[in-house]
Image 1 (cartoon, helix red, strand yellow):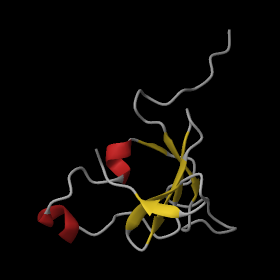
Image 2: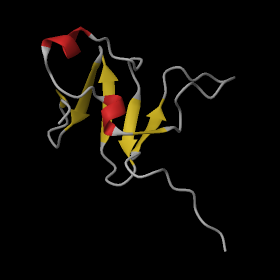
Image 3: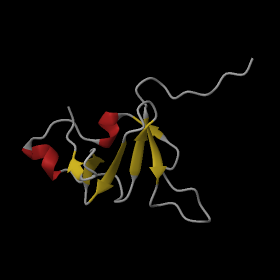
Image 4: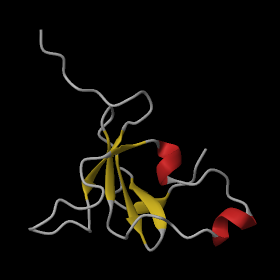
Length: 92
């Protein structure tokens, strides 16, 4: 019996666009799965605002359960709504 690989529980965000990727190398993050708390720092206090975003601009994550996509742009994680405008996303 063949069992399909599944990421561990909570690791539902897959990198689908990796700006570090080039024709010779797959990139640092492409295809990897992450938790939401790995993408967006929890909280929105003064200390968290001073921490730089660890993701390179242009990185796109896709939720493997819902298909929702978020993108890192200028150090912020932004999401596309039905209006096709991007909005900043904060951690819960």
